[in-house]
Length: 221
Image 1 (cartoon, rainbow, N blue to C red):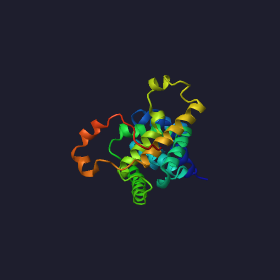
Image 2: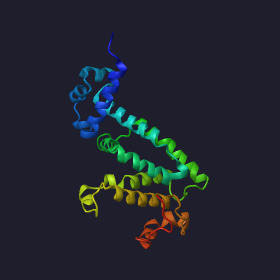
Image 3: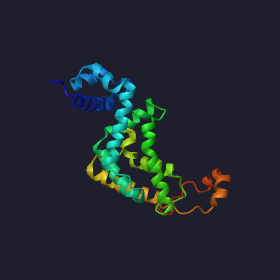
Image 4: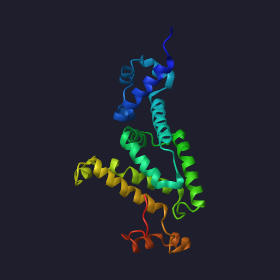
């Protein structure tokens, strides 16, 4: 009976996931992936093409798994941020993979662009229904949300070493999570600009300096 190609592909993808998360695209070695999967190295090229293609597929699959586990809810961005925070805490390899991808694959693969597109559309729709502030463009809303959600995971080890408790202490993470959700809530309910869109674009830098350091009226994660 011939070997099960599906089972072999699954083993190779799992091994590639671990290898790329640890070493990135440049540092990963195809022979290590094959050895970990107990498969012939040649099968990687047969099933997935070259190493770059395999890396892109692994990143796309990890983001697809995340999307299935944490459905995007534009009508409840704070709730989504909390669920995303929990998922990434349990699956830190996802952030490592996306970090390597930004460093080593600066031209965005189409699969990743397509993954963001419906989220941007959902945010725009939520804005039309007054569920999210219209003061911030949909792409910026999503970028800020993701930045807030991953702030602690992406903080430098030097900064985390100065935390008042162990960086990954359960209680400190609970408090950080609550603060993050509050920040996202503020983002979604940002009050209308008092300067108006005309003056905002014309005197943006002046307006920004005038109000630098002043907190927004309402905050949400």
